[in-house]
Amino acid sequence: MRVPQKTVALASAGLVALSLSACGTEKPAGSPAGDAGAQAEVAEVATAADLTELATQMQAAQEKASTSHLELTYAGELADAAGMSESTTSADLSYGATLEESSMHMSMAVMGTDMDIVLVDGTIYLSMGEMTQGKYLSLTMEEMADDPAMAGTFDSMESMDAAAQAEAMADAVTSFEHTGTERVGDLETEVYSVTLDPAKIENGAAGVDASTAAQVGEMTVVYKVAPEGLPVQADITMEVAGQEMVVESSFSRWGEPVDITAPADDEVVPYKEFGQG
Image: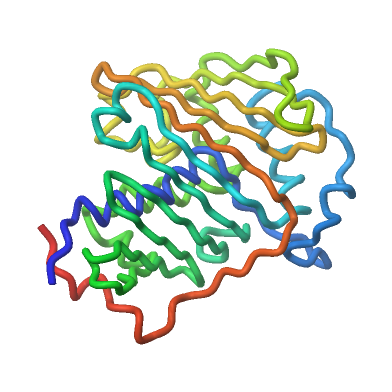
């Protein structure tokens, strides 16, 4: 059975999208995951002065909430050329201190292929319908880090931690501005615009590695943050080889219970047993 390596990497790229906007955090002692009342316990935060302070505020709020739902959409010339402009991605997430301690269930419809991605206990499970004969490919974090085709994806995924991501991007910030407020649904959000120089981003942060940095023009990240510090939207705009790519992330259902479990053993086949090419 052969699964094109590019297709598997594309599915794993769904996890990279999380690193562009999500911030994995350590749950404080005594705070159960999925506490629906967590948001109410977080006081309003002051306007952030820089990216590091903004990331710290979001991290503190997410420590209380522990879980969220994420919707991703893609736009721009590059998305059109890659067949992603009509793609849909949704995910339930439970944030841990590290990527290995986090869990996620993501569904993607990309380039005519329906994908199901589960992250549990440091193992990724990828299902691509008929392409994987109804099975899930299993791939550990160690295997991803050791696979040359996946190493960049692994580095990007590790940047899910807010503090680490901010540190990795700190030297790349060319401008940081609080641009005002914007109503998103029922929430009045604070809007921040961050401009980055891709050449100065540490390898893997914000989905940019050494092999792609030279092709990426100026990057802009717009965060829309609720009064208590929880991200509501995070929109990333970049230009790659002269074509624009926009990744729009929308967060909701903070603190609500999520049910994320690994597939049954008889539904799983190790990734290394599939042909690559």
